[in-house]
Amino acid sequence: MSDPVTPPSAHVPPPAAASASAGIDRRALVVAGALVGLAALVTAARFLIGLAALSTTSLYAVLPVFALIATLATSAGLWLVSGRGGICATSPAGRVALRIAAVTQVLVAVLAFIPAVLAAGPGSLVVLLLSVVSVVAALVGAVLAARSGSVRGVAGWVLLPWTVVALVRTVVFSTPVGFALGASSITAFAYGGQVLSIVTLLLVAVAWLVAGLRTAR
Image (cartoon, rainbow, N blue to C red; front, side, top):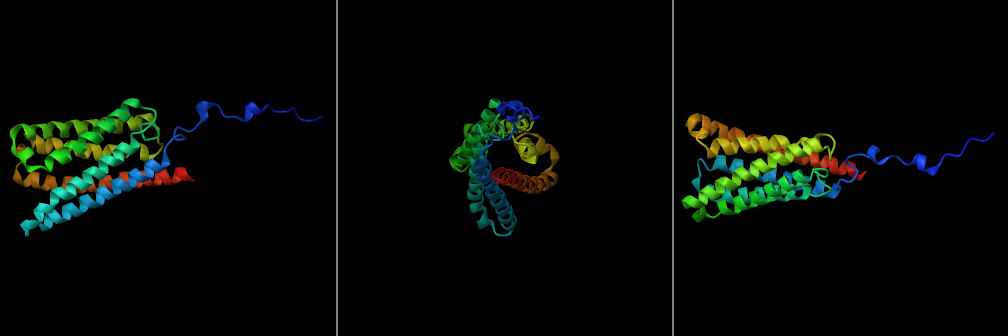
């Protein structure tokens, strides 16, 4: 007696069993990881140049350029992973938050690059408000990305540490909290904050690159 014929539909897995990361744009993850890695390296170079500038003040002139490059690279990376195939693929609110963060980061970097803007009272206030909007939006997007599970593993939540560091640095350097810490503490926090930013950016870069390359297999 022959075995009963199994209907073809029985071999098709139900949609619910499909992987949450099946629709992820691997190229976007790889390119975003490379951009964030570039931002980390530029930030590290800026940090070292800043240390050297303590004895050679002429080096201070190039620091804003490095900051602008790092911000543009990071913003481009955030924009890439904010698409429908990104880390917030199943969270429209998360995608919007990441794009707000990307755009406002660019605005802050460009405005801060213009001395006349920071010299004016309203201009510096606008930069401050945009900075707060940027880091809060990035944090919201990172939380929603982690909760959505669009990208499994570390790549799905690795943005969280960087956004937390960015938020803390913004609060310390843009509010009376910094003055309360004192000169010596704020200097130590400034150096430590930059190192943490570099490390967390590198973590994001590696996690996204690995996730993108694994998906390619």
